[in-house]
Image: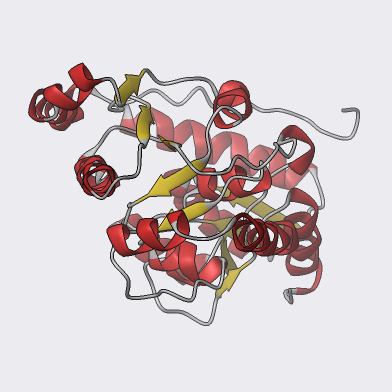
Length: 297
């Protein structure tokens, strides 16, 4: 767009001095050239940390977006200089501070066309990294338990480990549950681009989720697609006002599997209404605008 300018730092992993120097030089040049009233940094803590003192000296309001369970030293230092932090949900920010404001997720609902509700539920899906934090083994064991109780379910995990160093868990799970793969109800699919997520979700009946940490964006995307959602993640359940806060994953799964079609539809519509209210791009931009301009959401 004509009202935007891009200045590339070309951050190179491992070249710390060069990265810091170039970020500071380019940042200072841009700050002096423009009369900014506010600056916004999105999930770039090191860059935010380098720029924060410069912005503070020039009395420019600096708002940092951070939504992650990890609590690095850089975050604690950035807290000293930053004007405010924004995050998706209260539990998505690891520090307690009056500077933190949850503003929801930023999903474009037009990219997630609502699918027809499938009843009864048969095909379960999880889209996300194949890593221990996602508790894929717990999901598989939960689906296996439900199958033992007479529900003819299938489960598909979409996504690989994000790096070779984290791939051992994926390998062990595939080995441990190889008999389920042979039985034909357990499937593993590779990582897909974000643009293909709606197509994959449209072929499923329920999104099952077991990550313990911040709010996973894919849970909101699944709900906007019209999929029922179950999770043991406190942030997810608070976001969707779940009535089963302390229930296990198998308890949640059996509960939703035994709903009649009308009750299941009511459940999906209630979750979708909350996703539209708190999880869309327009809602996030409106709140962020207020914070950047006045400091109040």
